[in-house]
Each structure stands twice: as structure tokens, then as C-alpha cells.
Figure 1: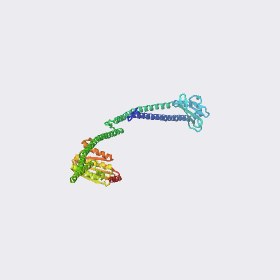
Figure 2: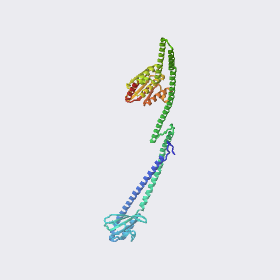
Figure 3: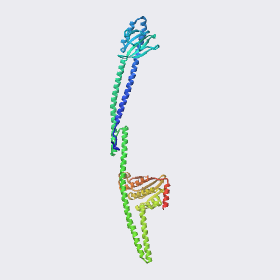
Figure 4: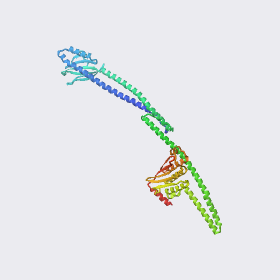
Length: 487
């Protein structure tokens, strides 16, 4: 039983089909040609026999009245014998008078029984032909009237069809021989052609099966300029594209796993840092508050109590500031409260302070809020892009443009840094940390239905463009109203 997905074996080879069709076609055409040739040749020979026998009978009929009028039957008999001797296929000649009596005959004085009656001319007929079966074979009996008409007498000539049939048979044999030779020669030629064709097809099938089994390096390598060669070239092109796609998929899967490990590691590090912040800073603040409040309960001096209360207020304010700082690190509240534009401007200021180069932000068409997932994704993509610029580009300036154009939002991040070979970076996976950052940006863009393109050359800076489709604006307004209500 064939396993699912396994290639089926060839049950009816194409070579066998072509060869069978060719042989069948030649046989049918040869048979039809032979049949038509026999029919046409037999008919022509029969007409030639009739014409020749009719001419002989008319010649004898023209001479008969003169001999009959003078009673010269001997000369008439000699005329019949002479005609019989000079025509090999003529079997008999006889003349009947108006009463049906034999005037002259190559049979002698008596005709074979019933011969006179098998071919009778009707009044007004110029000629009548009847085919008679004899022990020797088929004989064509031609009856021609004397010059005065059938009422004056009839000349009958019997011509054998044996020679004509032998000629037809000989012609048929030659024709069949020629057809057989054509069939043999055509079969040999067709076999060679089929072998040339099926050899390429078999190679293509073999390569296809190997490719389907997972050997993506196999190629057909056909160089012929016929349809099979074109098919082989198309297969090789398809195989190249599939191999590139598989390699790209493997590369992306590898990068996805690295990114996942990095994300998990970063999450754990962030949790550790938040935990340390909570324990070391905020925890200590609250511990100090608790100790200070207990001490405050024991004070009786009002001035000292006010001084200690002021210290406790400052300590509580520091704790609140630490909590707000941690909250901004986890997610900027300005993104939820005011939207993408103000959040990007604050991010630009923070990047300027962190890396020491100016970041210019331009916003066009963002009067209405975007969907929350779009704003979050664009903010994280731009944040990661600026972080990469600060870490790797050695730039003196960075620019961010976010513009809403009809049904899409376009975000562009540019810098004047050292740049890099984008093809080598994305193709070979060099500079793993930077590549993972770009891959994470691509993943975020893909998750919201967008695309990310990267343009960079050594010494010419880098340009990252993100295009994200967005709804017509109703969802953005509703998002803004929801945020305002929540605020």
C-alpha cells in the first residue's frame, strides 16, 4: 500500500503511450490506404476490362452483318478465333442472331447451358455487363447489339477478371510491404525520439523526487531548448527560490529562537532589577518611614516633631518618585495618557541625554489617536531603533518622522552614523545583538500587519522605514476618548 505523500510509480510510461499511438496510427492509415487502393484499383481495372471488351465486341459487331448477309460464317468464325488469340484474358466470343441462335462461337456449335440467357440486352441498350462465376474464376460478360439494334442480334464477349485480381493482389502486397517498412522505420525513429524525450523527463522526475525527499541541492540541469528544457529551467529556478526561502525561514527561525532567549533573559534581568529597586530603594524608604513614625510617636517636643515629620515627608516623596521612575521604565504613562507624539518627544529627550546626540522628531497628521496596538508597536520600534543608533552608529544626529498618509502610518528613523552592509547583516547574521534588535523590530511590525525595510551603506548612515495600515480614524478617536475617560 502506498504511503501518504509518497510518489506514485509510473504505470503507463509516456514512451509506451507515444509508441502505441504511433503504431496504431500507422496501422489505421495503412489499412485505410490499402482498402481504398484496392477498391479504386479494382474498380478502375473492371472499367478498363469493360471498355476493352466493349470495344472488341463493337468491332466484331460492325463486321458481322456483312458476313451474315452473304452467309460467310466461316470467315466470321475465324474473326472470333483471331480476336480470342490476340486477347489473352478473353475467354469466349459468340454471336446470336435475332432468334437467339448461335451464328458463330468460340465454343463451337453449342454454348454452355444457360450462358445465352444470363446477359440479355433490352431494347435500346447500347451495352450491358454481367459478372458470371465460373470454375476458372469471375468472368465479365459484355453484350453489344449489332448495328441494327438488339433485335438484329447480339455480340457477347467474356473476359476473365483473374489477371486484374492478380494485379490488384500484387499491388496490395507491394503497398503492404511499403507500409510495413514505413512502420518499422518510423518505429525506430519514434523510439529514438521517445528515448531522447523520456531521458530528460526521467531525469526531471528523479530530481523532483529527490527534491521532494528533502535534497534541496538537486537541480535538473537540462540545456535543451525545447519545452522539456524550458520546464527544466523553470524547475531549477523554482528550486533556487524554494531553497532561498527555506534558508531564509531557517535563518529567521534561528533568529527567533535567539530573540526569544534574549527576551526571556531580558525579562528576568528586568525583574531582578525591579526587585532590587523595590527592595533596596523603596523597601528601605518604607522601612525608614515605619521607624521614623514609631520614633515620632515618642516625641513630646513640638519643634522636634515637626522636623522629623518633614524628614518623613521627604522620604515618602522620594519613594513616590522611585515608584514613578520604575513605572516609566516598564511602560511610559504618557503613551497611554497623551498618545504617540508626546511619548516619542519624551523618548527623544531621554535618548539625547543618554547618548549625547540630538534626536529630532517630526509628526505629521497625528491629530487623532491611533489604535493602541499600533501606537505601542511604533513606539517600541522607534525606541529600539534609536537605542541601536546610540549603541552602534557613532552618529552625531538622528531624525524620526512619523506621518499618517491616508490608510497607513509611515515611520522613518534616520541617522548620519557609520552605516553598515545591510545585505551582509541580514544575510549572514553578523553582529548578533544588533541583528536581533532589527529582527525584533521586524517582528513587531509584522504583528500589526506592517512592513519594515532597512537601508544602509558603510559611511552613509542608516534609514529604517516602517509602514503600518491603520483604520480610517474612527477607532483612533474612540481610543483617545477611552483614554481621556480613563484619565
